[in-house]
Amino acid sequence: MATQVSKETVAVLVREINAALKVVGERHGMDIKVGHTTYDPPGNSFRSRLEAQGAVEGGISERARKDWEQAVAIVGGLKAEWLGKSFTRSGITYTVTGYNWRGRKRPVCTTSQDGREFRWEVGGIISLMGGRGALMAYDKERTPMVTINTKAATSLLGRTPPTSGV
Image (cartoon, rainbow, N blue to C red; front, side, top):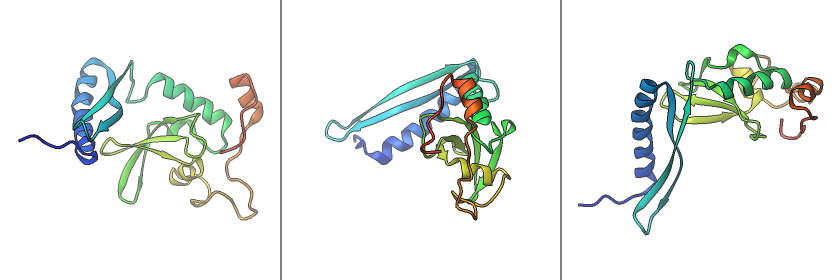
C-alpha cells in the first residue's frame, strides 16, 4: 500500500531526516540539514535541498558568529554573550543561533528544543534574555526600544544601514 504525500507527511519526514542528519553532521564536524522543501500533490512526491556547513563550533557557524558580532555593534540592546544561550517562552526552550540581516521585522534566529527554526523581533529577544522593558515595540514615550548605532554600522558595513524594519 502506497503512502500519500501530504504537507503533514513531508513535515514529519523532514523532522526525522534532520534528526538523522544531525548525528551524521556531528560525526564529521558539520552542520547538515534539509533546506528548502517542496511537494507535488498530483505527482505524490516531494523534493528537498540538502544544506551542509563545515567547521561548526558549539553548534554556531563562523558566519553566524560574525553576523552576530556586527549586529551587537550596530543594533542597540543585543549582547555578544547571547549567541548560543537559551531562553524559555511558553514552556518551549529556544537557543539563539544568529542574526539574519535580510529579516527586517524578525531578524534574530533561534532554534527550538525539537530542532525547528524560529525568528524573533529584536525587542522580544532583549526582553526574553533579561534586557529592558516588556514585549513591546515602544517604551512609554512612544520611542523605539531598538536603536541603530549608525557610526558603528558605517564602519563595519562600509555604508549607512537602512533604518526601516528595525
